[in-house]
Structure formats: C-alpha cells, structure tokens
Length: 480
Image (cartoon, rainbow, N blue to C red):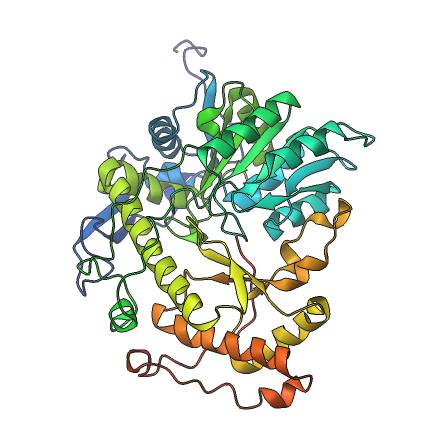
C-alpha cells in the first residue's frame, strides 16, 4: 500500500464529472479581420475549434471551460487581457491585475459596493448611464452630480463640490465614462484627464473608469462625399471611397495616468465583439481584485466559461494580437464613417432646430432641442409627435443624475440621444427628416396631433428606397 499522503483524493466539492458533459466540440467560423468584412459579400474566414478533453493551443479544453471555475476568470482569457492592458495602458505601478466580469453593468455594481454603503454619495457626471444610476438606487447610494462641458466632467466643478462637501459621510469615489460618454458622446482630452486625476488625488477619491467605448475613438470629422455615395447600396462602409482615414492614436486612459492605484478600470466586449457574450474585464490593484473575486464567487461565480473560452481562442490563437488590433481599427473606421454621415444629415435637416457637440468617440449624438421657453412642457408632446412621425430617440431625462445635488433639472427635458450605431446608414436621412417635422410641428402649432397626422410618409432619395423606409415598431431601450 502506497503512502496515503503522497496524493490528495479530493471528494470535497459538489462538482459534476466532465464525462457527463454532452458537448464534445465547439466550432465557430469567424471573419478574418484583414478581409473587407464591411463590404465583401464573401469575406475570408477562419475556423475556431474547442475540443472536449484536450487543450486547444493557448486555450483550455471544453471540459475545463464548462466546469465550475474561480471567480477570477478563465486563465487564458485573463492572461491575454492582462498582456493587452499592459500594451495599451501600461499601468504605472507594479501590483495590478485583471479579473473577468459579466460586462460593465455588472462590474459597476460590484465596484460601487467596494467604496459605498447605504446612505453614501458617489460622484457622477451630470448626465450618465442609467444602468449606473440603477445600481446606485439598488445600493441606496446617492448620486452627486458634477457639471459637464464638451469634454465631459468639469474638473473645477468637481474640485468645488469636493472642497465644500459637508455631508454626513466622506466622499470616497467617483464614477465616469471618459470616452464617447453615454449619453453626451463627450471625450476627455489628455489634459482634462490629468486635471480630473489631480482632483481625485487631492481629495483622495477612487475613480471608477467605465470605458466601453474606448476603442471606438474616431478619425477627424470629414465633410466630403455626397449623400448618394455615402449611403451606397446598403449604407455600409466603402473602404475604397476615400472616407476611411488614418485614425489618430487613442487618448491615454485614466488608468495609464494612475501612479497611486486609485483607478478601477472597467472594459467590456459588448461594443467591440458582441453584447450578449456578457464578458468584460476589470483592471485594478491586486488587493481590489481579491475583493472583486469574492463578489464574483458570491454572485455569478464567473462569466460563462464557454464565452470566455471562445474569446480566448479567438484572441490568443485564431486572430492573435495583430488580428485583434486590425479588428479594432476596422471598428473605428466603421463608426467614424457612421458618425460623419449622421452629422452631415443633422446639419442638412435639423440645423437650427437642435444644437450638439461633435462626438469624437462612441455611438451617440447628444442633441439639445430648441423648443423655446416652454421646452419642459413641450418635450413630452415632441416625443409623442416623433412617435407619430415614425422616429424614436432616447429622451434626456433618464440620463440626468442631478436631482439629488440641488441642480436645476428642467434642462433634462430638452435633450435627445440619437444612437447611430445600429440603424442602416440609409435610414439616417429619413429619421432626421421625421425629427425635423416633429420639432417644427411642436414649435408652430398647439394642435400638434392634427399637424403631424400624415407625417409618417417621408420623401427620401432613391438610394434609400427599396423597402428600407418603414421602421419596425418596438419598445425603446436605453442601453449602455
């Protein structure tokens, strides 16, 4: 009989045997990022394969991916993301790491819980992601709104609020979206980020840097090309047209400026691969990650191992680092094009009816609607009129965080967030014509229902016909 202490027979866990897992192999066909996937009818592809019991090059076997796992995430998934974070952000202190998340909405709630208790206040931008506000409501934490300008959170306003704070509990953290901000589309310059970080250091604040649009930074705005050439046959990016430009380097993140370990950075694959993979990652000092792992293991255990394995295989082996970088360049070119066309259509059809700041990242154009002195009363009628005209945009009110900070919130009734990411480019012009009809109807007549009775039919260019006009009815969803 051998030494019974030489090996450990583990019978402690309630873990199923992998032989009972019926999935033997997972295969996926993915587009090669070097192909012209935005234009070609048959882009070049690559096969991604995960096998049941054998390791798949850099990625774990299906048996491992389908089994219970630690709250830190799948090793190969996190290893790639730590390496990529080092390349892109180059954190300036030693003891940092990454942990898997189920996307940024889940990560926001967990990060807030580390710094806030019921009754605390968390610093946020005046306009912010409704999912973050919902997380604060659930945690019984009050949002403390800071004024914004075209670059996002204003550092002087932030400093004033912190210096004058007389609440019952100290301020410990701030939450912000520094790139392609939701809903305003604002992107902080490097100088703005330095000022925000300096204020955070002055008042000893942690920074929750929610940055799902970081890799969707645009090339400079282009005013060239006609409408017919812009939308093409299907409203897709024409990489041969001259519209694709050399994009500028990415603005450095707050994480890249952090020398004290006060930034908790949230990244997500929702905007750069696919939303329902429900995978992202958090970068933070190791002692913060230890606490986040406990939170993961008490809630989700970890994101889906299958989704993590699919992403790991794609990034580590199928595409590799250069393929991933090319995919991100493709995304930036695609969204730059969409932004450019949409802004041209705004200038053409709703000039004078709305004001906006040109977005340099993200998916949104934030428009202040010029409805006159009775805007707060007129805005609900405008939304109803837009519905009759057949166009839907997100109203400003759900994004407004300033109700508990003493600010005037009536301006929240004057804004619309237009998302230019999903709708066919061919639909931009009819959408904005319908918006213009609705605004004019509200501004010019009090009898608004009859004024827009027949506005659902719009005159559109030839390139926008052939069944593209009628919008599908649906419920508005305000998403990240």
